[in-house]
Image (cartoon, rainbow, N blue to C red):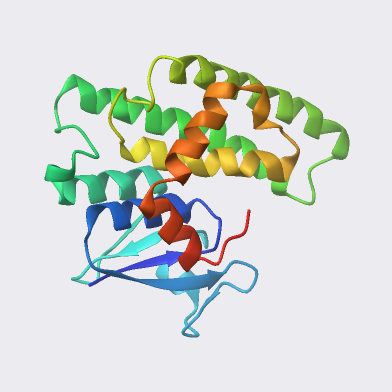
Length: 203
């Protein structure tokens, strides 16, 4: 059985949601990101030396890290669910474009806003940059219910977590109706509700 190392509300929530969507058997192990210890007492740095989540441990003991890679692996593991397009197709490259955009232009933009050592005068500029990126996403989501059009993909799970983070840093997503509609749409999925319940999240 696979094991997902997670921290509540972290980007590992996207992998948690998709694991539930796939129907694959898995267990969770919580990681304390302050102490880098797992719930079972293991040193998380021995599992993932950079020390961040998620890490997906496979049945054979191998591990995969980095959200976009884990999400694609899970989608490929259950192709009949249609969470990722087939490898080598133009749609797969479009999915990878979205995953890279979310990771590099959105996800990484939150890091300095969460960090205590970021100069306070620098944070407004960081928020403005994120607002521009979300504004672009809003125009794209005006075209369809999901990033890839009419069907849920693994990229939607990652973006949903990023939208949840906006309120933590003082960015109001209500300025983008399509973003709020998307957040509600994903949040209403049974997999999203289950993942939040299992992580004891109250946003």
